[in-house]
Image 1 (cartoon, rainbow, N blue to C red):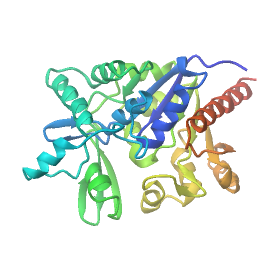
Image 2: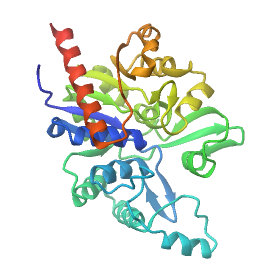
Image 3: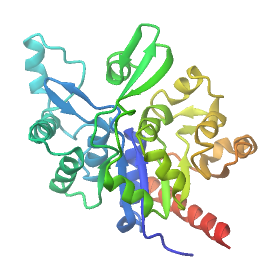
Image 4: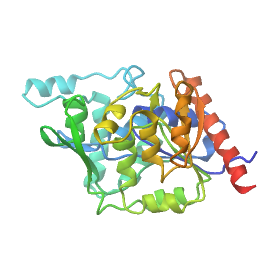
Length: 320
């Protein structure tokens, strides 16, 4: 079986970070490039916050809060406590050490540095040894049309706890944004492209909405494999299942398959959902069922090594 020279992981959120960690500690680490979602990015306290990129970097640096899966382990909240005392809105949780990251990022953005360059400085200085690339250097922000009108992602996700009913999603700025050259080069050179078990509509779709990204993936000869974020038909974390249904996708992994039908070749599902295989394959996707729950570090590494091995077998079949 061939060993891949280049693996690209498209990821966002806690599920994406777990997949990144599994590959980072796998035998395929040296082939890895991680591409992160920026649709969650926003301005808080005059600081530019990039939650998905930071979660990816903190996780790979062994610095993430192990309870929440985001934020920095053992961080304090003295700054937010004082801001609340001053009357500022503090519903967006930002720890003190986390705020240092946002100050650093915001200072460099003000000097004209690209998000790609800034993210590389952050991950290098935190000891992460694989590339972590924002999908674009431009600003793209996920917005949701709810029963209370249009809201930004963080208002929906954090402030409103995903409670509003969603009738539409847009990725503001994607129509004028372009993928970075680093992202396009990584995709063009990839042997395997992995879509992490991230929320398809909130983490993966904002990246695909950026100009050139979907075309680059379509034109790539890489094996394209997606990992379902559902187990036993339910989201492990977050509103993926609910949101897909609100946006008129079929329930369960059938909805995941519909989303990925023109994007991926293979869908990895949990063994508890093996009955979904026939429905998934009706969308033109091959399937592979295994345990996809990533609780421990060994779970993450085992799953992601299996994902790559299954992808390599598919590559051999395709080119036989």
